[in-house]
Image (cartoon, rainbow, N blue to C red):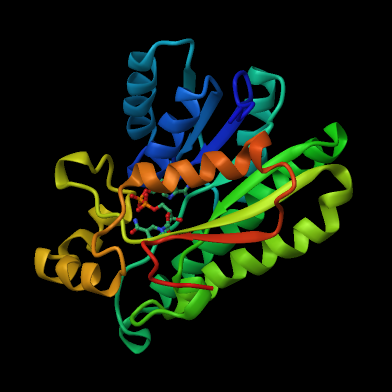
Length: 265
Ligand SMILES: NC(=O)c1ccc[n+]([C@@H]2O[C@H](COP(=O)([O-])OP(=O)(O)OC[C@H]3O[C@@H](n4cnc5c(N)ncnc54)[C@H](O)[C@@H]3O)[C@@H](O)[C@H]2O)c1
C-alpha cells in the first residue's frame, strides 16, 4: 500500500515523549519531514537524534511550542511553514490529565485539563487551517481517548475535553471537506512509558500518572481489554500514519479506537 508520505511536511505536537515520539518516528520512517512542536525542547531534541539515527533521508527538528497559548501557536505554525514551505499534516497529540475523582481535583487541575486538551487542539487547528484552505489540501489527526467516547472513571473533565476534540473535528470535517482537508481522530488504549523513557517534567507520566499505574493496576486494565494486553506507542502511531496518508484519502470525520477492543463503537 502506497502511503504517499515521502517528502510530506508534518507537525506533531508533543512529539518529545511516549505516543508523540512514536508518531514522529513513524512519519520519519515514511520519509516525511517532521516538526516536533514541544514545550520541552530537550525532549524534542532527543527524538530528533533518534530520527537522524534512522537515516534514509528522514528529517526532524524541534519547534518550540505551547499549544495552550494562541499567539505562540500561531508563531509555531508560521516558523514551521518558513522552514518547510508548507504543512501537509497536523497531528494534535498534546494532552494532559491526572487520574482523580472529579470532586478531588482542584480548580487549577480542571482548568489545565481544558487548556491543554481542548484549547490546545483549538489553537493548533485555528493556526493551521488558513494555510491548508489556501493550499486546498491537508490531513489532520487529533489524538482523543476512549474516555471521550464513553466517559471514564476518575477522568471526568479530561473525558469531556476528549469528547470535545471529537465533536470539534467532526464539525470542522463538515466545514472544510470542500477544501480537500480531512480530519480524523485516534483514541489510544493505555500506553504506559517505561520510567527511563520519560523525557521532561511536562509529560503527564512525570506528574503522578506513572505512580498511579502500578503493575497491579496495569494487570487489571489488561483484563478489561479483549486482546488482554496494553498497547505499544508504535501501534497507536501506525493508525495515525494511516489516517494521515493518501491511503485514507476518502476517510474523514472518523474516530478510531486503538485499544485492543476496549470500546467497540
Ligand atoms: N498514554 C496513554 O495511555 C493515553 C491513552 C489515551 C489517550 N492518550 C492521549 O495521547 C496523547 C499523548 O499521550 P502521552 O501519554 O504520550 O503524553 P505525555 O504526557 O507522555 O507526552 C506529552 C508531550 O507533550 C509535551 N507538552 C505538554 N504540554 C505541552 C504544551 N502545552 N505545548 C506543547 N507541548 C506540550 C510534553 O513535553 C510531552 O513531551 C495525549 O493527547 C493523551 O491524552 C494517552
